Each structure stands twice: as C-alpha cells, then as structure tokens.
Image (tube, rainbow, N blue to C red; front, side, top):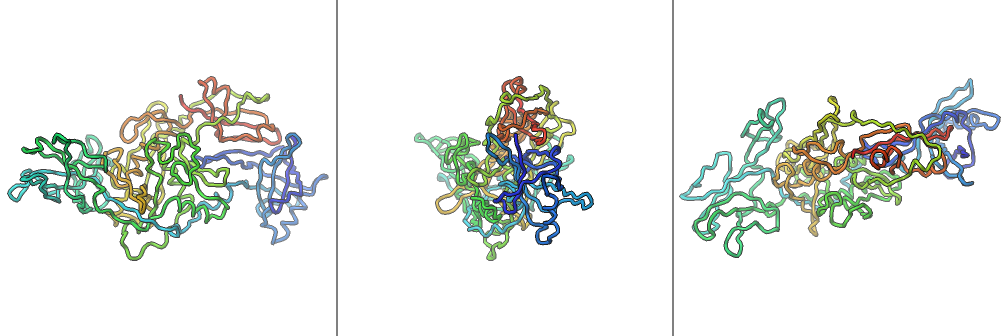
Amino acid sequence: MNKRWQISTDNATWLREVLPVNGSKIAFSETRDRDSGQAFFRKTMTSSLLFMDTPTSEDYTYFRSFERTPSRRCATIYIRLQFQCSGTWTTWWTGQFSTGSGKWNLHECWFEVKPETLDKYTCLLGAQSTKRNVLQVEPVTANVYEFPSLEFILCEWSGGAPTCEIPASYAQVRVWTPISPFQLVLAWREFNITECVGGNPVTPPGTGWTMDVDSCDTDGTSRWYRTPVIPYTFGDPQFFLDGDGFPEPPPDTCLWLKVGEFNFSVNPPGIVPFYICPSSGTPTEIDRARKLEDVADYLVEQMGCGLAGVRSDLFDWNAVGDTDGYVAGFDYVTGREAEVNSLLIVQNTDAKDPGASNPATIGEWSFKDLVQFMQVMQCLWYIDSDNYVRFEHWTHFARQQGLSISEFTKVNQSMTYEHMKSNVPRLERIAFSEALSRDFVGKDIVYSGPCVASDGDEKDYEAGNVITDVTFVLSDPGSIPKKGFVILASKFNGTDYDVNLVPGAITGNTLANGTLSTANIMRDYWTWNRYLPSAEMNGVQTVFDGTVDNISQSDVRVCMCCKMLRFDASKSVATQLGEALGGIEASVEDVSYNISLDRVELSLTYPYR
C-alpha cells in the first residue's frame, strides 16, 4: 500500500507532506486500559519520528522556523498517516506535537519528536481528573428508611411486666393489645458480626458496642450488640389470617420483617407470627441529593470536549435499548425489575446532617471518580457513534466477530498457547470508604486450586471517596468524613425518591440501600468477568456465568493490507487455534503495527471452556 505523512496547523487544511527519514523503524500499538474501565482501543505511536533536510524535503528547515519563534514553539502541529486503497487516501492515525516537545541536534541538523495520539478520547482523558463542583446540579429529595441489623423479642405483658425474660441489652419499645385480653411487649437491639483479625475480635465502627459472642477460634467472627441508634417508628406489629382464621404470610405490600410469634389460646388459635413493615416508619428526608445521571452529564459538559452527554441501558440514562436482554424497567444483567435505574449522589455532610441549616456548597468530583464507581459495578465506558459517553455492564460487550485470520493470504499463526496462571489473583474485593453492616463490608472472592499462583495478587476495586451504607452514615455521623459522597439506589415515587429497602445477600437482613451493598453488588453484577469458572463469593462456593480470558496466544502475524485498515480491535478474531480449542473466538489483547514492513502482530486471549 502507498502511504504518506501530512501535517497541518489547524487540523483542517493538510497542504504539506513530510518525509520522516526513519520510516523503516516507525511502529504503532493498539491497546485498551481495562484497569481504567476503558472498553475501547487506542492507537499510539511507539517510536519517534526523525526529520532532516533531504533532496526531496526541507522538513528540518520547516520545523526549525517554529522552534526559532517563541510564539510558535509550543503551537500545536497536527500530523496524520494515510494509506491509499483503490485509489482513495484513508486517514489511519492522527497525532499532535510541538517543536518545543521534541529533541534537536543543531550540529547534525535533525529534529526528533514522538507525537501524541489525537482521537475522540484525547480531550476527555486529558480532563478526566479535573474536579468539578457537582453541587451545581439541581437537588432532589431522597427518603431513607433507616434499618440497621435488628433482632427482636416478643412476649406477653402481664401484671406490669413481661412474662418472658428480656435481657438488659434489649430496649422495650412497644406494648399493645392485638386480641383482648392479650397484651404483648416488643423489645429490640441492634447487632453486628465482624470478621476477626489475627484471631482477635474486631469492634464494629461507631459507639456503644458490647461483645455478645467471640467465635474467632471457630468461624473467624465475633458478634456484637448495642441499643438501636434509630427510633422505633413502625407502629404495632401485625399478624395476618386467612378466611378460616389461620395464619398466612403477609401480603406483598412491603418487605415485611418477622419480629416474633405468640401462641394464642383463643381465636385465632395456635402460634401466630407478627411482622413490622420497615417502610411504614418515618423516613429521613435528604433534600440535597442529586441524580447521578445529572451529575455525570454535568461532568461531561464541564470538560468542554463537545460530547453530547451520557447514556446507559443498565442505569436507564437516555437508554438506547440495543443491549441484548434490555427491557425498559428491568435490569438486563439480573433479569429482575430494575434497582439501579434511579441512582442518587449526596455530599457526605448533607447525608450526615440532612436537617442542617447550612447545606454543603462544595462537593468536588471528577469523571475519573465516576469511572471508579462504575468499575465497582463492573461497568466499562466508551464514546459511541453519536458522541455520547456510554457506561454498560461487562455483559454488554459480547464477542462480535471482527475478522477471520483465514481471510488473509500471508499469515503466521502459531498453535502454541499458555494459561495465564500468573494473572489469576488469590482474592478480589470491593472497598468502599466506610461500611458498618456485614453486607456492606462484604466478603472477598476467594480463588483456589492449581490454576491459582501461590503468590497470586489481591485485586482491589476501590470505590474512592464513596459510601453506600447510608444507615451507618445517618446513625454514626461522627464516624463519617466530611469529604466524599454517598451513592443511593432508589425508586421514583412520582415526587421524590425512596431509597431501596432490600435483603442483604449475606445476612438476609433488610437493608436501606442494600442494592448497593458489597454483597448484593457481587451477587448481582460480579458473576461475569471472573478469573476462574468458580470461586468462593459471599462466603459460599459459586459457579460464575462468565470468565475473563485466561489463555494467551502471541505472534499471530498478518499483512498490513487495506482490509486491516478497517480492523476493529474491540471485536473478536477467528483463528485456527480457536477452532482447535473447541470453536471459540479470541479477544484482542494488543496489536503491534510495523509500518515499514507492512506487518501486523496480534496478541490474543481466549476464554475457559
């Protein structure tokens, strides 16, 4: 193929062709940074360009005129590489540099520079760490029904005292007459279970905890209790009868919590369970929350990169609806009714003290911070064809075949592969900045077996300055830093947003914002993109739905022909090795382009079967 290098000073008018004298050494690579949540590949120049005056060019003299003029030394010069296919010139790569960013040899009269890639990601990646005051976004109101881990005692009230023994650690909160002449008393306390460290019990965060049981030497945990830090606002416990007067389960009107049972000697006869409805209590109003979608839009707008906004089928942000399994109002990952389609974000001080007369005025966050939280949700991002930043779960990026190696005439594809044992961590974990409840603290994913290196790494997914355990924030505000944010999963009630009350995946306890607890995030969004087909997750052995590629193949070589100019590295590759491994397709790990030799080298990975 014919090729040419052109430069421009305005990225629009390309009037000058240049001739790098080291054309035989010019190389590019194409990679993606999955550790930064990027679903896209970028081409970067891995070598430098060397310019001199030759019989056919005066490139050194031209660039020297920029260098000698102070006002032009740092001016941007654009450069592009084009290939000619079927008589048409096609731009394959564009970069930018200045003469002030290169190396000069005035004795031998040469100028060397390594241009930086200029593509649709350049501006955003350059501005992604810049903090913005996201409290400029219009606030909304979040209703939080605080509900820590609670345990209850229910017994009869007779002669001015309960007929059963109520330990001093329980606080009596309710006496009522469900059926005359029976009077019942309800007592409660808060509890927590923590993992032991070095064989020693660990006190939960906050104040007022007393150890209940030390099980460090048996199951590695300790149990604690304290008087609840929330008021009892849930009314009289209720029981439910069928048409024949016998107990039946409570109606599907809320997430009912069983608080005990009582053996009546009159109608209704027998043992009758009693329940309270957590959402019947008095919610805490946080009227300074912001919709996370609006915050994401604001961050993208403030970066000044000319992007259209944000999109997501998973979070229902301006949803396109093209993700496999997408149905409006449902989660395409879990298949259940959507729980993350109304995410909110609150500055820590506004969450710690919702009724403060002086609300927070500064809450700085960046696009990079947003991406960090998205990685906890196992989401990647890219800029779509409509110029929107799009966040989707790992399952959205299913293999779509991009090319078949058999289509090329000049091919070198080795049938050698190896398992990437050293890439498999021993542990994976989510780390929010603060957490109290066992479900919000979570448990590590633990890999084992001969496919795990004995000295394997521990892979952390840091959520940054984000908290999701909102009950901890409201009940122990002194334990929460002033800087940072609380992210909430909610449902819009037509006026405000009610924070989700759901059972925790580890304890089964009703949790405010349990959707975003570590345990529930793992259960719902982490069964894909794992390193082995199974591991211990949330304390139980779990078979995963999808694995990250763990077989590698290198030195797959094809010619740099016109067909490769249209190659999309984000799509899969059909190879001879993949066919031998059971008809599986490869993902591209990275691509190396040797421009002078017109050769492309692919490093590929394959999934377990």
